[in-house]
Image (cartoon, rainbow, N blue to C red; front, side):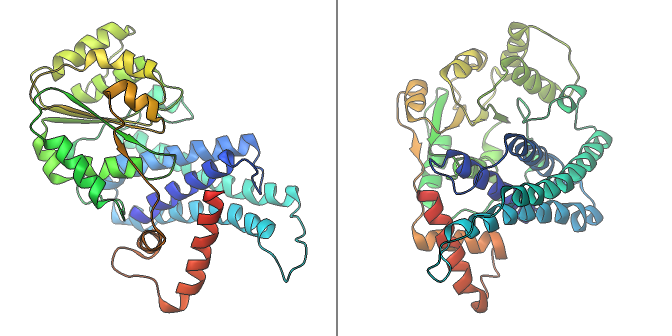
Length: 353
């Protein structure tokens, strides 16, 4: 499962880097970008929420197919990038015809669409998708994980021991009031991975009475986030339209309890202002972790710059690359090390541009 999840994260980061690049070597069609992002979001959420309930048959089949299709999409993108930016014997590189790239990528998207449909059908049978979620084609307004879903899941981390230890100390420190802990850094640098490794740590799972993980995103919907929190908390379906009613139910359910809430991918102070009203200060060491790309937002929310994520050193990048590609223990085969380091250098150079 970790390989499939890492492949989806890597694909999402590649797409994001292309979109943010001031002079991208490759142009993606907007519709293809939306299709890829929507599919990645659905497949990631499926692995997060349902992987622990899959039989070995699914582990050996569906999860492998998810990894393969994510790798295939990234391979199509990166192979066309390499054709554009790598010199060939000092000669001018001939541009790849845009139509060829479009067709190659569209074929992979079609394969991903089929897997997405299969995943949604499985989730319907498992009862983990509500009608309102199926109608949406993007990230859910919010998601919840109980401690029972966390066993055995730890995403690869390298070069972040110090900041992880600092985060753990802030989560379990002796500050009695509800504490806000921002994690700040550019997209793809590892904010979510850092937060998740702390969130899933057995010490943290045991320390807090209840745990919530919410993905906020740019186009947040406060009502849907609150409804998701309340429904998952009570395990019952609810049809309440008022934010105030939902917020009151959530507030009462959290009162007197030590809670941990992770609000991933926060973009605006307005989102925080809408939701913070319903998080009680119980004076019992509750914590709210917020991941954001915006340092000024972290300052507005908490009064401090928060925990800042920095780029990995070259050796740390290589260690992380090997863990994701070859697994925690295996390491890179000697015969592949040279080409692996070349690929990593291309990726790092492209990222820094």
